[in-house]
Every structure is written in C-alpha cells, then in structure tokens.
Image (cartoon, rainbow, N blue to C red; front, top):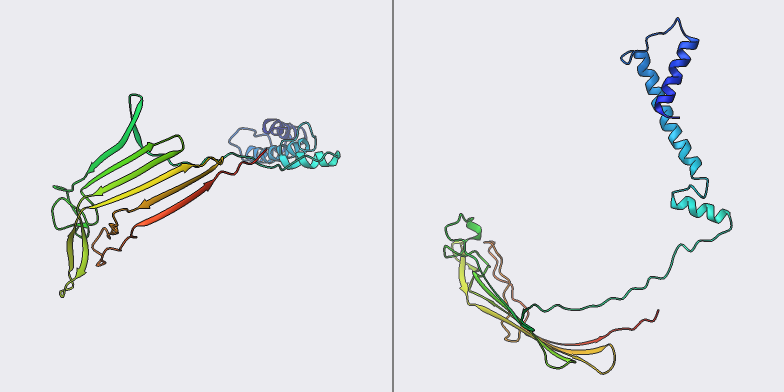
Length: 245
C-alpha cells in the first residue's frame, strides 16, 4: 500500500462511518492533515514491511549478509574470502626529453623575483628581489645512460643560486642576515642487472661534492640554518621475488 491508497481509504472510512461528524475533506482542513499524516506513517511502515519480506527470499534478497545467511540455511557454504595475488613493479622514472629516436637529458631552469611586489617584513632579505631561504635561480639536470643492456648510469644535479639566511643575533637583539654562496648538489648511481634473474646491485653517491646543503628558515625567526647531511655512499642489493600462482 502506498500513500495515495491509504489516504483514499481513510477518507472512505470517514465518509462511511462518520458522515455527520466530519465532512470537510478539502486539502487545507485540519482533518485532512491528520489523515495524510497517518497515510504517510502507513506508507513508511509498508515499505519496510515489504523490504523485510523480500529479504527472506533467496531469489529477491539484495543485502549481502542476508544472502549469506539464506545460503547457510540451505546447507551451502559460500567462499567469502580468497587469497589475493598481485604483481608489483617498483621503478624510478628518470626525466628525459626525446630527440628523434634518442633521448637527451632533461635540463630546466627556474627564476623568481619579488621585485616591485609588496613584501612582508619577516620574509624579506637584504635586497629587493629575494626572500629568506629561497634561491632566485635554480638549475636541474638529469641524465640516464644505458651503457649496456645490464649496466646503467644515472646522475642528477641541482644548482641553487645565492640565498639569504639569518645567521646570528647581534647585541641589539636584531637578526643578522647573510648571503650564502651558490650550492651544487650532485648525485650518481650505477645499477647492474646480474645474470641471476631478479637480482640487481647498485652503488651510488649522494652529495658527491660534500656541499652539506643548509636548511634555511624561510622567515625571520632568529634561528640559524640547520646543517644538512654530508656526502653519502650507498650500496643497494635488490632481488625480485618470483611468486608462483
């Protein structure tokens, strides 16, 4: 039963058994308001009653839990879990630009300036076009060279232009700003695929020039730059486990 059917039945019931007591069935009458509220409640109850009855039949049930319960009741034990199998490939993408049938290193340059722009005092450096901690010029270069089918050489380098940093507090409790020299970060990595299937070895150097890149606070907080790590030499051994299905 739906809302319209229940409302019509309530109106018919009132006309049949209370013809002299109530006879105003216009949409704006208080009596019709109560009849429609009762029809609304009956409509909602009918929906849930029909839904619950539907879930008791295997061919009409929609809820997963009810399907499993009905299957168990008929003696069938569904396989609700299974072993997951997946192939995962880990790789590092080295940027490069295609040129015809070959590839050349990916070289890019960035420049920023805050000249002629409104600046907040705690971010200002000693000149009109820089901010604390940020280099106005930055150059990136990535190179990948497949020497042989099994041996590859990778190199990344980043050149940061001069930067400004808070290095000390003077006797008047004012921050001392200093210009830092440009920094070149250079990394190398050699990778070799061994004859053993799935086994590869690699040797690399991070910060080959031992620049000890400084981490500068990008605002005037009275803290000197934090020292970065020195040159690192790494050895990597990688084996791809071959799981059989």
